[in-house]
Length: 130
Image 1: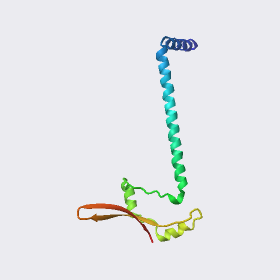
Image 2: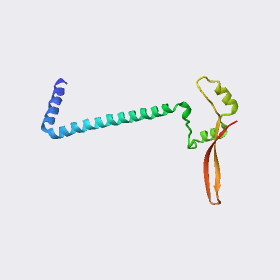
Image 3: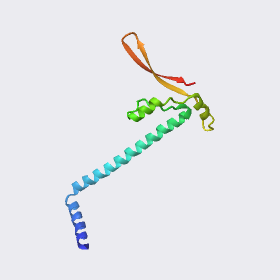
Image 4: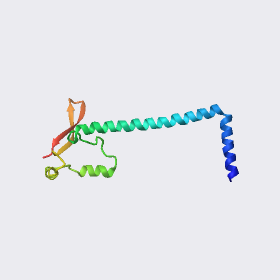
């Protein structure tokens, strides 16, 4: 086994030495590919940090996350239809939390408004849910 290993090492170096330009291009390709992966991962992580810093600078009271699309899963659609959202009583319970500075119950509804007799527009409106 020891002789086979050293024969493989000798053959490897002989092939590299015999094909110097091909070996150089292979080494260059591996180096550039590795560098490209490192640069892209670094750029994406830096961008992620910048976005989160921007969101944190708004403060928690300045950000509201709302799903714009209706759920695709039938069970989730059924849950959405059954949920009435927060009520005034829920706000009173949540308002006792020391981690929050202010709480308001908001209901978002889609309203259909007709402009003339031809076009329909769907508006997303927020209502205080009292």
